[in-house]
Length: 390
Image 1 (cartoon, one colour):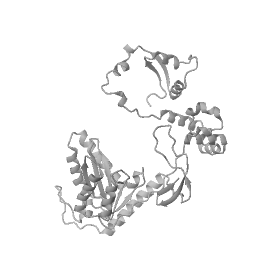
Image 2 (cartoon, helix red, strand yellow):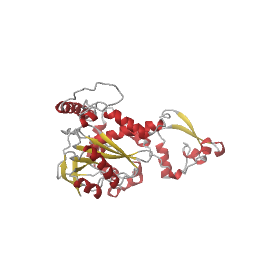
Image 3 (cartoon, helix red, strand yellow):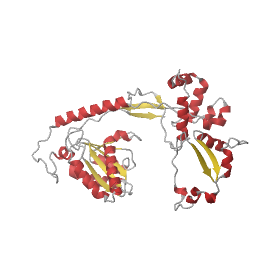
């Protein structure tokens, strides 16, 4: 961003680049060099040759004390941003980008090219002449609008419905976090190993203190889908609910606590403090502070009493009734839902069993198609979770 609209000189110890990026360049360059030129087209610069012995950058490259093979360069999307910038600004004043998109959808050739780009099925392209420039073609996608937020109703009592998750710390340790949906009270256990046996052992200690919950919600981590974990919950009469794969928002309560804990650990490391002790300090502070949604501290909702701290305060305090807590929870969540749905332009999903849908795949690189090539049939829909089959 510091170079946009600025004339600058690029110094390099690679003599051929002085000719390649020159307007006097002759001969047919390779496709790879052409891609370099296209990627840098949005900048105005001149290339000047400088000998390697006089190049500061060249000497720095020899001072690295780590193997460059172990580094993974982060992919940049500057070229994609530039292409999108050109496409949007090339739209005539008398038209809109939406109108051009609708007209393009009626063009058979453009629609066919778009399908080839999205699903990487270039073998179906009718005009084979375009295969030579297929890596230079792109399309501007308009993503689907998200569904409206569906807040979770607060349970009627503490420790009925809980949520559990694992979080990896920069130190290599794991934090096992268990959150109570009613009180927002959460337990934290530090683990070095995250096997199913270790998870069950940690849960057993928590259940000794708080009793057995009705349900436990987790993601689809290997520890939580193992036979050991399943057998333990079944033996204790606990229902196991798993969220939609690759959709952490469905387990938002525990994910939010994870972010808070990770922030605390980073602060402790930056200040060179013991992060374990800092987590203990944070927990006592969090558990005794009134929650922004319920208006009551998590410890008070959990144990029906206030925890004594070093901070002086009124000890003889009558807590709010459960009905008032529920009303306040519903009111605050309703306001949050209305604000978030309007801001995200959310709308109800109209997918029903029997519909044919495309399933999003994990992208390994920029050439991986966004969706699977074959459509899937919707078998069942429960809330915002959809079950599909080939």
